[in-house]
Length: 419
Image 1 (cartoon, rainbow, N blue to C red):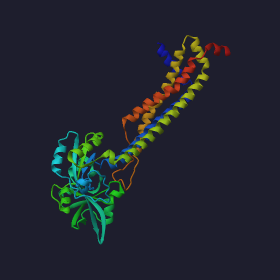
Image 2 (spheres, rainbow, N blue to C red):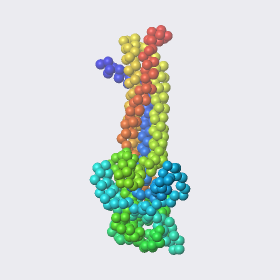
Image 3 (cartoon, rainbow, N blue to C red):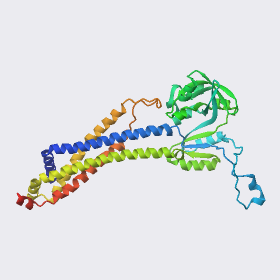
């Protein structure tokens, strides 16, 4: 009964100054709305930028890097064993870029329960012949099926189909900027010259656009078999094994393990994209900071309104305490008022924030560098709504705590005597 009475008194005080109550609720609603919309858009943008890189990047990459041998002939001479050797201009040794025993490596990796999938690749520098001009490029031989399954390769095809590489012999997919330079379209023939001077004609099966112009100027893709044929290599020739894991955080540990186990070079995704991840973290941090600042500002608005309400309701508070209500009861009344403003303002803010996010998600967004994107990116992660709900209640509670404590300490005798 007493709790019900406290709620009824709080309701009466709220409705008595309904304009001030509405202003406070609108402040909470606006803050929650902008918090959700801003965070949804910023995180959606981060995910878009991340996917441009991370979707095309293996979690662990195995390869052989061309580098100078750590063992030099002078190390074999007994008379120099105790000295320090300073050697300049060391040339790379005769190691090849090819991964040794690549077929056996794939079988071992496929049996590893931590590995989600493997895509073999051949990477080789080539020249694209445009009349008398040779354009520098990179030829990537890929396993079409695994590349689509693990790295979403088909999402970046703007003309043609990626599956045609496995069907049409001696075919190639060109980057959009490279295709523009060569004035080539689907069905045309282009000539590729390898570093050894071998020229090979290939049929254009498609055009891809990654969103990174520098990559689109040089990159091209063909099947593993065609790349081996162009380079004059055997069917087991591969330069890279791209590994996708079930858990991304295991990448650094597995990279070190595979490098020692298979005697190859290994690079994990965290190392290769450290700067990119830092940029994403900072953008998300800024979005959270702005959103939380909006909620804090709304909290100050509630604090001021409750303070004014206390001064205006001194008589009512004095009468309540004179009729038997304790200071704790008065404290509860004003806490209920603050939480009511936060609760109802927060509910409306969550709804408006979701609707505003949906509106942003339907705004057309077209750019030549991102052909697969048609609207502004938005993330609908439920955690945003949970954070907004918790923070709105916490902010309004803290905003109401100090005025409620002040109201609970009012001496009714002083107030009534003053009247």
